[in-house]
Amino acid sequence: MLVYPKLNPLSLKEINITEFTGIDKRWNADEKTLFHSQNISAFALPALVTRNGRKKVFSAPSGERITGIFSFDKAYVTTVLAGVTRLYSGDDLSSLSLIYKAGTEDTATSLICKAGGNICLFNTRHEGEGSNMLVAHNGDFTQTERVSTPHFNDAVIYKNRLFGCGRWRIFASAYNEITNWNMNEERIDIEARAFEKSIKCESDFTACTTYKGHALFFTADELYKLGGKDNSNFELVKIANYGCVNRGALCESGGILYFVSKDGIVGYDGSRVWLALDKLCGKETDSTKTILCGKGKGLYLNTTTQDGSCLYGFNTEAEGYVREDDFAGSCAVRHNGNVFFADNTDIYKFDVLYSEDAEGNDVRNLEWQVITQDICDFLPRNKRSSKLEIGAYMPFDNLIEVFVSYDGGDYEITHTISGVGYKDVCIPLTRANYNSVRFKLGGLGEAQIYYMRFACNVGTEEK
Image (cartoon, rainbow, N blue to C red):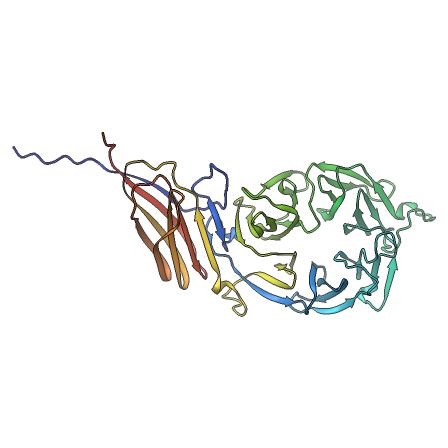
């Protein structure tokens, strides 16, 4: 009697990733997260898309170092040359012109504020020498006034007063008189005179801002809200044990106020305070040098880690972050709805679409990369074959290189995807005997990875 041979059944195990949740360096990270990224956009999550372009819009003259960029009615930039402050202004950060050069006796400063039509520069004299606030009335630096104030770490306009904070004290000018800081002035409307408040706090004041009709003051460890309406009842009320590390680490995005604390990025909506992103997983950061800037539904975070300077994007809706690159920013601002970052010498406009502005756009030469987590939890010992399927889109004729690493070893190139448009490829893996596998994808120019699927055929266990 003829009997057909009996075949052992094969089963298929697979992991299918159509949504990516950003970087996670924790030991128990999900396979849908990334171990590393370069020039990937956090604001496209859960899609895996290369970032938009950047365009240089201003270069400081030779020898000058950019120390601050600001957005009031116009754009303002402070630089320093041989210890001397210079101030530029323009309708946009691409149309700046020099409007003020400080004297050689002045100290370098990057703290400015716009009060009505007046431009105020602070800390222009050495501490203790007085007359260290410079006011350009109606923005005209041929009509300036020197005013004696304390040194401030930050300043803000609130309730028709100019407020400044430094060390453990806050100060306010007289009502509607930004040059009047006399707290002992004899006047009938005593509630309108200048104000000072000292408090016992964990650390010095670092920043201040206005949000939803209130003035907020930050130390490095705490957040306070200013109550009251005049100097007879102004009072600081502590609302959180989260502080802000510096005045550049504070911004508003999507109606939420975000700031960088020692514990990570904190959100505040006027009633609730929460830790939106803890310290970057696996990275020791120097938070005192961190810069924060808002963009639509997310944030840019520029900080210094153990690997050097890093620029991250944080998607506040998807609650995921990715690393863009090693951009070494010194300051940032959002002006006319656009994000601008500066390093020591140049200012760049971020998120420039190539289809709308191709000249000087860096996106066509963008080197991007993603590295997956180790895939190991569900891998059987008895594998018969395995494969990686990738769905990709390239708007221009580019290349995507695919590498594989077995058991933490060196990366081996296993496939190259080329051409224009949508590509669906299946890449057989040449090795069967391994306990973990990790993939690295990289290319030049714009690209999107819209799914990754890893699968292996499993045989019956050998006896």
